[in-house]
Amino acid sequence: MINVDYLIVGAGIAGLCMARQCQLKNKSFLIIDDSSRTSSKIAGGMFNPVVLKRFTSIWESQDQLNIAYKFYPYLEEELKQKFFHRIPIYRKFASIEEQNNWFVASDNPVTSPFLNPKLETNSFLHIPSPYGLGEVFDTGYLDVGLFVKTFQNDLKEKNFYIEETFLYDEISINENYVDWKNIRAKSIVFAEGFSMHNNPFFNYLPLDGTKGELLYVRIPDLKLKSIVKSGVFIIPIGDDVYKVGATYNWQDKTDVITEEAKNELLEGLEGLIDCPYEVIEHFAGIRPTVKDRRPLVGSHYKYKNIYLLNGLGTRGVLLGPYLSEKLLLHIEEGLPLDKNIDVSRYYKKLQLIK
Image 1 (cartoon, rainbow, N blue to C red):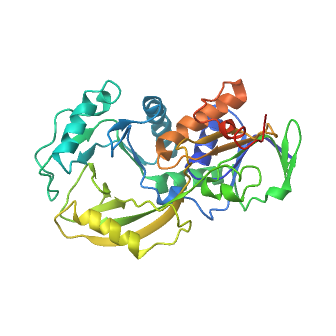
Image 2 (image 1 turned 30 degrees about the horizontal axis):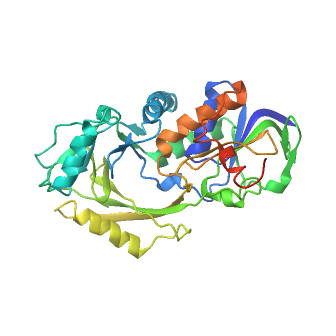
Image 3 (image 1 turned 60 degrees about the horizontal axis):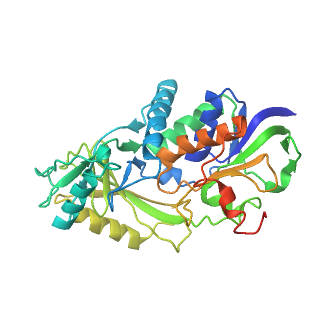
């Protein structure tokens, strides 16, 4: 029997962040994943502290940034790989009204630390912007695919990773531990993203799932060094290649690419740039979104050594390090979870507890 502190099911952003927190706190763990489905591999990876559509603040954004700015660079140094990029995001305005909304937000004490009140009026090359652009501070992107691949490979080399399909009926639950095959863990953390719908311990929770599609395009003439957001976002990732995204589909729960989404993205791209481009690749995946737009973190209502880390939605780059740290502190030190993220907010609604 192998004894560990944590068994982590799922090796996307959430599961990998939980594994990293275990490393930082000297907790033994094994991570299990069969790589069958994860939204992390196709994620745009952009992070920012404000909602770019409405110029409003994001819940606990400063705390999330503070953690991420240590979490990813330290891991980069350890893995000898660069995947965390701090670069500006510029929001292109479509009207005078959007300009005015920006000025209001840049004067708001909550959002002003993140918004440059001075507009960028000199258009970027091949990005016409008659109403200007606004710069957002504390922004950038995580090369999610590289982060996932590099960290997974490192964990495999250290024998911390089991590449296998997790079967729920192979779990034996005891008061102080959980057994799975020849592994005994003090706690098990499910970080499966949209695949949570197959998990009998948590599949009754309102994880909705939102399909997203994005493109990789080559634009030799653009020479962009910042992220620009209008109807779509465009992220420079090197060698004249850009990520263009993303679509939102609340009905389709497959990871099959569609011409409809591709055309929507290309229409947005053509509304943003005025130079030739070439589509290289097209990806789709399901984001783990929750109906109240808050994550699902915490223990099972009945089995107190079974935990959930899910619902990171479109903000997994910042939420992954933040939520995994909160969950580990909750388990190890008994620190209460914020009511906004605690999964127990649904137990009473669903009449699972009194």
